[in-house]
Length: 169
Image 1 (cartoon, helix red, strand yellow):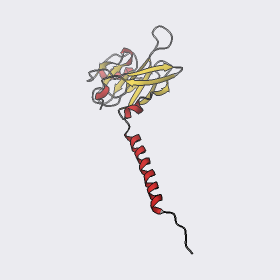
Image 2: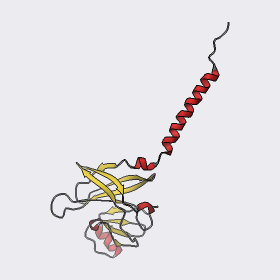
Image 3: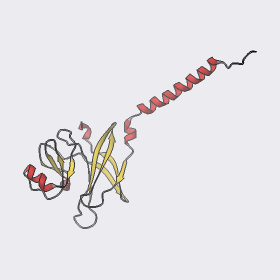
Image 4: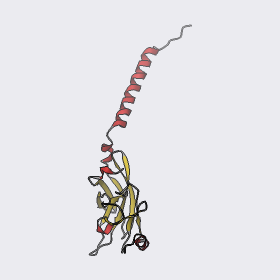
Protein backbone atom coordinates (compact mmCIF):
# COMPACT_ATOMS: atom_id res chain seq x y z
CA UNK A 1 0.00 0.00 0.00
CA UNK A 2 1.32 3.42 -0.90
CA UNK A 3 1.00 6.30 1.52
CA UNK A 4 0.17 9.74 0.22
CA UNK A 5 2.74 12.29 1.36
CA UNK A 6 2.56 16.03 1.20
CA UNK A 7 5.47 17.76 -0.40
CA UNK A 8 7.80 18.50 2.56
CA UNK A 9 9.84 21.02 0.54
CA UNK A 10 6.84 23.21 -0.25
CA UNK A 11 5.53 23.23 3.31
CA UNK A 12 9.02 23.82 4.73
CA UNK A 13 9.45 26.84 2.43
CA UNK A 14 6.10 28.22 3.52
CA UNK A 15 6.95 27.64 7.15
CA UNK A 16 10.37 29.28 6.90
CA UNK A 17 8.98 32.20 4.89
CA UNK A 18 6.37 32.84 7.59
CA UNK A 19 9.00 32.48 10.28
CA UNK A 20 11.27 35.05 8.58
CA UNK A 21 8.39 37.51 8.16
CA UNK A 22 7.47 37.14 11.84
CA UNK A 23 11.08 37.60 12.86
CA UNK A 24 11.37 40.74 10.72
CA UNK A 25 8.27 42.23 12.40
CA UNK A 26 9.65 41.39 15.84
CA UNK A 27 13.06 42.92 15.08
CA UNK A 28 11.42 46.07 13.70
CA UNK A 29 9.33 46.42 16.89
CA UNK A 30 12.37 45.98 19.12
CA UNK A 31 14.53 48.36 17.10
CA UNK A 32 11.85 51.09 16.94
CA UNK A 33 13.11 54.32 18.52
CA UNK A 34 12.39 54.43 22.23
CA UNK A 35 11.46 58.10 21.79
CA UNK A 36 8.26 56.93 20.11
CA UNK A 37 7.40 54.89 23.19
CA UNK A 38 8.45 57.73 25.53
CA UNK A 39 5.92 60.11 23.99
CA UNK A 40 3.16 58.37 25.88
CA UNK A 41 2.63 60.48 29.00
CA UNK A 42 2.80 58.89 32.44
CA UNK A 43 -0.41 59.29 34.44
CA UNK A 44 -0.48 58.96 38.24
CA UNK A 45 -2.80 60.00 41.05
CA UNK A 46 -2.09 63.63 41.90
CA UNK A 47 -1.20 64.40 45.53
CA UNK A 48 -4.00 66.52 46.98
CA UNK A 49 -2.91 67.69 50.45
CA UNK A 50 -0.02 70.09 51.15
CA UNK A 51 3.34 68.24 51.20
CA UNK A 52 1.74 65.02 50.02
CA UNK A 53 3.86 63.42 47.29
CA UNK A 54 3.63 60.84 44.52
CA UNK A 55 6.62 59.08 43.00
CA UNK A 56 6.66 57.85 39.39
CA UNK A 57 8.99 56.72 36.62
CA UNK A 58 9.31 58.48 33.28
CA UNK A 59 10.91 56.92 30.21
CA UNK A 60 13.37 59.10 28.31
CA UNK A 61 15.67 57.75 25.62
CA UNK A 62 15.12 54.18 26.80
CA UNK A 63 15.88 54.97 30.47
CA UNK A 64 13.40 55.01 33.33
CA UNK A 65 13.98 58.16 35.36
CA UNK A 66 12.57 58.46 38.88
CA UNK A 67 10.31 61.42 39.50
CA UNK A 68 8.37 62.96 42.35
CA UNK A 69 5.40 65.31 42.41
CA UNK A 70 4.72 67.33 45.56
CA UNK A 71 1.61 69.36 46.37
CA UNK A 72 2.79 72.71 47.69
CA UNK A 73 0.74 74.64 50.25
CA UNK A 74 -1.67 77.22 48.86
CA UNK A 75 -0.52 80.80 49.19
CA UNK A 76 -3.85 82.55 48.56
CA UNK A 77 -6.42 79.88 49.41
CA UNK A 78 -7.46 77.07 47.11
CA UNK A 79 -5.22 74.20 46.11
CA UNK A 80 -1.49 74.72 46.04
CA UNK A 81 0.56 74.17 42.92
CA UNK A 82 2.28 70.92 42.04
CA UNK A 83 6.05 70.75 41.79
CA UNK A 84 7.39 67.78 39.79
CA UNK A 85 11.09 66.98 39.53
CA UNK A 86 13.43 64.22 38.48
CA UNK A 87 14.76 62.56 41.65
CA UNK A 88 18.28 62.23 40.23
CA UNK A 89 20.54 64.71 42.00
CA UNK A 90 22.21 67.07 39.54
CA UNK A 91 25.43 66.95 41.56
CA UNK A 92 26.61 63.33 41.14
CA UNK A 93 23.54 61.36 40.02
CA UNK A 94 22.40 59.88 43.33
CA UNK A 95 18.67 59.66 44.03
CA UNK A 96 17.12 62.12 46.49
CA UNK A 97 13.85 62.00 48.44
CA UNK A 98 11.36 64.35 50.04
CA UNK A 99 12.35 64.82 53.68
CA UNK A 100 9.54 65.92 55.96
CA UNK A 101 11.81 66.07 59.04
CA UNK A 102 13.17 69.41 57.87
CA UNK A 103 14.26 70.51 61.37
CA UNK A 104 16.58 67.52 61.54
CA UNK A 105 17.91 68.15 58.01
CA UNK A 106 18.46 71.81 58.91
CA UNK A 107 20.47 70.87 62.01
CA UNK A 108 22.63 68.50 59.94
CA UNK A 109 23.41 71.04 57.20
CA UNK A 110 23.54 74.11 59.47
CA UNK A 111 20.49 75.87 57.99
CA UNK A 112 17.16 76.97 59.40
CA UNK A 113 14.49 75.28 57.30
CA UNK A 114 10.77 75.99 57.50
CA UNK A 115 9.26 73.34 55.22
CA UNK A 116 9.93 69.85 53.82
CA UNK A 117 12.87 69.69 51.41
CA UNK A 118 14.48 67.31 48.96
CA UNK A 119 17.58 65.72 50.49
CA UNK A 120 20.29 63.85 48.64
CA UNK A 121 21.94 61.69 51.28
CA UNK A 122 25.07 61.04 49.19
CA UNK A 123 26.60 64.52 49.54
CA UNK A 124 23.90 66.36 51.51
CA UNK A 125 22.56 68.57 48.75
CA UNK A 126 19.27 70.12 49.87
CA UNK A 127 16.65 71.61 47.53
CA UNK A 128 13.58 73.67 48.43
CA UNK A 129 10.50 72.78 46.36
CA UNK A 130 8.75 75.94 47.64
CA UNK A 131 11.44 78.01 45.91
CA UNK A 132 11.35 76.13 42.60
CA UNK A 133 13.95 73.60 43.77
CA UNK A 134 16.54 76.20 44.76
CA UNK A 135 19.75 74.75 46.22
CA UNK A 136 19.65 75.42 49.97
CA UNK A 137 22.83 73.57 50.92
CA UNK A 138 25.45 71.21 49.57
CA UNK A 139 27.65 70.89 46.52
CA UNK A 140 24.90 70.86 43.87
CA UNK A 141 25.16 73.79 41.45
CA UNK A 142 21.59 73.75 40.13
CA UNK A 143 18.05 72.72 41.10
CA UNK A 144 16.67 69.31 40.11
CA UNK A 145 15.41 68.95 36.54
CA UNK A 146 11.69 69.71 36.30
CA UNK A 147 8.99 67.70 34.60
CA UNK A 148 6.35 69.31 32.44
CA UNK A 149 3.03 68.23 33.93
CA UNK A 150 -0.71 68.69 33.53
CA UNK A 151 -3.24 68.14 36.30
CA UNK A 152 -6.82 67.20 35.59
CA UNK A 153 -9.57 65.65 37.73
CA UNK A 154 -7.26 64.25 40.40
CA UNK A 155 -4.79 62.84 37.89
CA UNK A 156 -1.32 64.08 37.14
CA UNK A 157 -0.01 63.62 33.63
CA UNK A 158 3.77 63.79 33.24
CA UNK A 159 4.46 65.00 29.71
CA UNK A 160 8.18 65.74 29.34
CA UNK A 161 11.44 66.38 31.14
CA UNK A 162 13.13 69.80 31.17
CA UNK A 163 15.56 70.43 28.34
CA UNK A 164 19.16 69.97 29.34
CA UNK A 165 18.51 66.87 31.43
CA UNK A 166 20.39 64.82 28.83
CA UNK A 167 23.41 64.98 31.13
CA UNK A 168 21.70 62.74 33.68
CA UNK A 169 23.86 59.69 34.22
